Length: 168
Image (cartoon, rainbow, N blue to C red; front, side):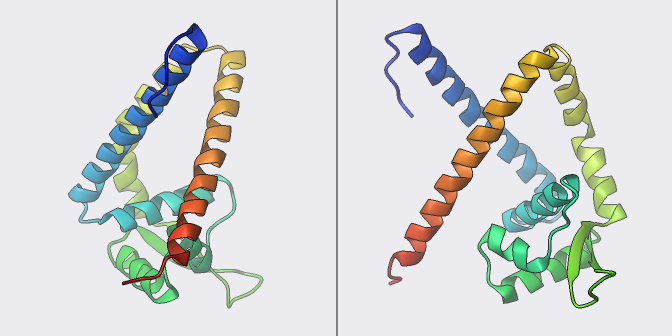
């Protein structure tokens, strides 16, 4: 976190690290503002993000996968999904090939709320990205994807360590 800044590369690495931290904190504040406006708790928000991410990749999420991502028990996931479904944020759809399998999707009402709130941020993001060439964006994309992989690996290691600790 705190790095020596003796040369230009070290200075740049420290600045990038600080900017990533600031971005993360600001994104959390924006997410919490959305959650507060719509009566959601942090876990609800993380669930909505997981559902959205799965839809964006074309691989809808199941309740089981959602529980794994959020590190929740099956009972907690069921209560979470029930709550988000009642509030109009998500819907359950049965797989057409295997009716026992359930996929979670953004409901129209939930998607409209998210678009209304996050639309201005999306426009700002588009404006910033328009300032960069395709080649620059390719580098940024590779960097961010690698950073996300690194963060998730660390998250999983922390979870594994926490699971090994005895509870008091």
